[in-house]
Each structure stands twice: as structure tokens, then as C-alpha cells.
Image (tube, rainbow, N blue to C red):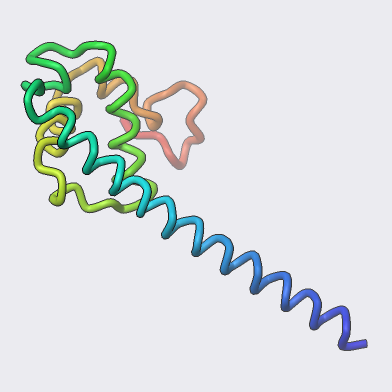
Length: 113
């Protein structure tokens, strides 16, 4: 009766390798995306993505950077412009209030007050 156990072991290995590959691939794609954004924004960014006031692009960019840092541990030191913009997001009350940890449906263990 070791046959089912061997299949289970194989399934666990496949799932674990798939998970590891997906994380590495995601990090690679995020780094490529960030490099492209750095180049795209270098001539138009101010305090925020398109100037010195938050605009529509920032509503999309803020959660992307937050996810890259918190979920995929991307080192933002590689991207100085995006790091500077992210600091502006972190200082702005509207962006602070929009963070996932401050939403009403956030599980208690993930809440940020």
C-alpha cells in the first residue's frame, strides 16, 4: 500500500515547486515592470507619478508598489524614482486610509491601526 503514499509525495513536490516558481516568476515580472515605469516616469514625475498632486495614475500605481514590497519582497532601492513616489503615497492621508490593513473587512490579525 505504499503506492498511494508515493503519489501523494509526488503531488506535494509538484505543488511546492509550482509555488516556488510562481513566486520567482512574479518577482522577475515585477522588476521588469518597475524598470519600465522608472524610464516612463523619469521626465514627468514630481512628488507623485505625473506631477506634484496625486492623479489617476497614482490610484493604480500605489497598490502595485505596495504589493511588490509586501507580497513579493521586491527591493525598491533598485528603483529610486518609484521609491520616492511610494514615500509620498505613504505620507498622504488618503493613501494611508486606502491600505488593505485599514479596510472594514480586513481580518483582525491583518488590521493596521
